Image 1 (cartoon, one colour):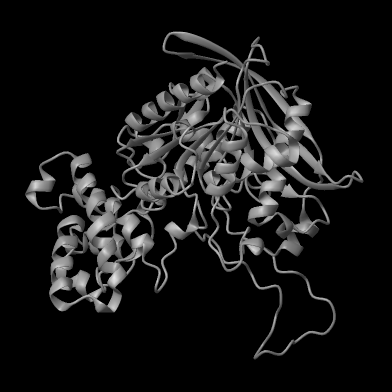
Image 2: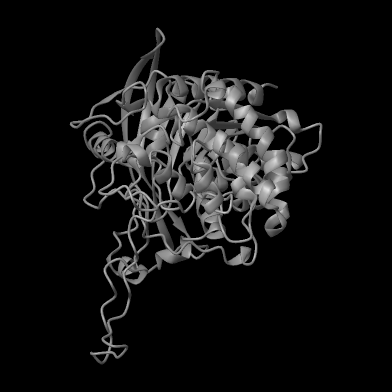
Length: 512
């Protein structure tokens, strides 16, 4: 989820008092340090547990084999580097040469694949209210009527340090914690899986969410060049393809422009817009916000401090109309309100905050005077349910046994390295362009939630329109939208729409 959640600070690997070491000689590494993980890593062994299952979807029976297990990544000299945990689902008696195969993952960095696995694509899912609100414990697991198993076999991958995946004993896990190292690790797993399970001739797809879309776009070119693996299609769910679009910093105005339509969507949902916008459809309000953001707002921000007092007053009034905020507050914010302050400000009068992953959901802080929420209400709504459901599911239904904890979303991958991208924003739209150009059969689906404050839809539109893709290929990227947040599949109508959009893309991408 694009370095968006820091669940834990990495412990310091040294002990000091007033800057002076108190003990001489070697010291034990901190509990959460990469060195400690290397010392305490479980043995690097391959373990596969297969089980047979059946599912009825829309009157059709699906008989499938689930495999929960690990593959070991090795160096050329045979030394183990890491153990990668995965869960795969394969339709029984299907022709592997024509049956699509999808490798799916989430993002973080630091996230396991549990969200797409148990929320959207897998044959079993967490039971969540139809509107995407928080379920109450105890939680339930139900058949997924929208499972992608209807049209593709599935492999859910947990990168090193997430899920049950770990660096091998003696290996420092930090070697895997970075953009380039992550691509190499996941690509190695994909290549190994294709060989072990005899799937080299299958139509191949990727599905990623959040930073998983960053990974998927990077992999599209990496797999092509490094392994000769040409993809048929990619599903980008809640995309971040260019970090320039979501990084807020002084002097960098682009994100304020690209977030504005999402602010409008949030204000529309919480009934904070003027009547002419509020009484119309959400899409109408968003379209007005798009036009204003790309025209008047952009031109005003370009003027910077040269914006006149009269122009500033007019700009604040128009921004207030589209955001639900007070014009005075917008002026005091220098016409630039970052998301973390918007979460707090929109419903301050009701002593409520709105969520980052889904701005429809509301949180409650101890006080209403702060500048940022105490917690993300939208993550709190799903964390407990997905954690409990997966741990029960992997043990009782998939019969996979291990005593190490399943890292759902961890801070142990921080700091995440962008060493080769220093002094620039990571932009994976270029490797995606290269992959689509060299492999013109490649199709891409971009699925977006209107209420997603983590990876706003207008930012994805902006990046795709600036890819420089040849006109003959622009039709190979399809956009779809729904009225939910980052984890858009938590809302039933959006889960249905995602399944439909993916099925249509797979049909187009698999056609001879």
